[in-house]
Image (tube, rainbow, N blue to C red; front, side, top):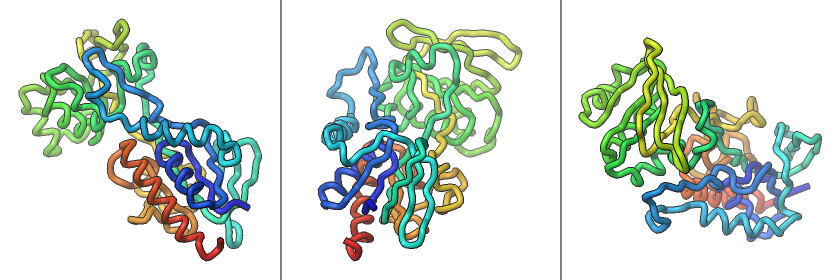
Length: 301
């Protein structure tokens, strides 16, 4: 029987596990990798390291601590979490059954990708998935945002404050009457490309251009310094579906102490309804979740 099982080895999960170890409770981290999305590191030809706030430096410190603590980690994804009397059973994809008094879900999200030629090759080399994180690096540059929903609109608006020009490629024409969409439509440095689709991303060492197809099937190539795929983030919550309360985007709902609606189950990071998908935010949420779980466990220790 474990005191605590942490699901997910990204920034929130790593932080929660290290905090739990330092509280001297019996903890196990279940994950398919250590570091999660924080392992992707942006490189651009005009950027020096000192210009970037790299949250992964903190994540790397926690990861290095766990790499030699075999007893505190198990490299296997979680299939399902089942409540059982006064504790929980964590079922892994390999058929394992682990019993624990408390759980922290820090399983993160997965990005909806374009799945076009060139995207994979240029990830974090001119192609990225968070304008919120990287917009300040594109001052006076030409950028492109790809996506249909509010996330893409917000990303375009943020880039428009610093970029020389922003292209917004939208396969559909949704939300054209929203105040933000109306503002972008009249912005001098924003080009709204309604009904266009991305065909390919081209470059050399870095992504340099995006090939798009118009509603009339005309092909054109646009030179850009940065391409932001802002389509959707899908929370990895399958293991707790029907168990904890989720919001309308499928994210785990937590209170200010990272507690879910089920006593003993906590959640942290991008998988929750906490504001902003940022490495440093996830680190802080992981620390809070661990402290909150420790308070819950104290009467049992």
